[in-house]
Length: 216
Image (cartoon, rainbow, N blue to C red; front, side):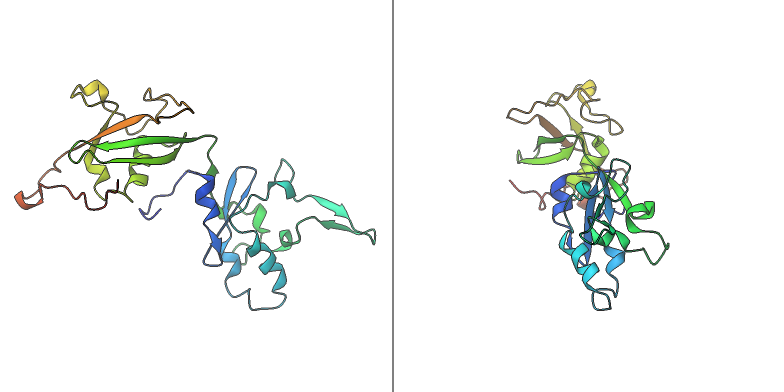
């Protein structure tokens, strides 16, 4: 996310796309690690193969190579030596001196327990955008996600229906489920209505909301 606020939960699709040396994430038993700092200057140094192997797994779930406590799984080699199944576990974070998989400073969040789809409809344009969110996301989190489609997402009141009844307003500090929007795996996805609210102290020329970022 580009809002400057740390995201708590991630969709697996969000991890998959972070698979380069410039932005490399991996998953270990639900924890999302940003291992990008490990590659700083190391892909061209010696021994570089160990870093290239880790980079090859960027964007993937490495849980099979770690036990339930997050410790590396070892095997006995043909020479009778105890070696890690996943060799890059020996890499240390230069900033902390810790093995990267044991470095909490590299954990940026968790994988969601449940991906949810919702349809967001703008009452001004009647454009509908279907998006995927995390079950754990609050409405405020979802608004930040929705900024990629509408830069003014936080200036809208989010409601469960088109009625002006204040009880239909979704509480920004609560999740969809906590707001009464129950998950149903069968389509169609729940509909969320957004109503533009004029920001306080806005000048007359800024009363029209920016809807150029929305897509159908």
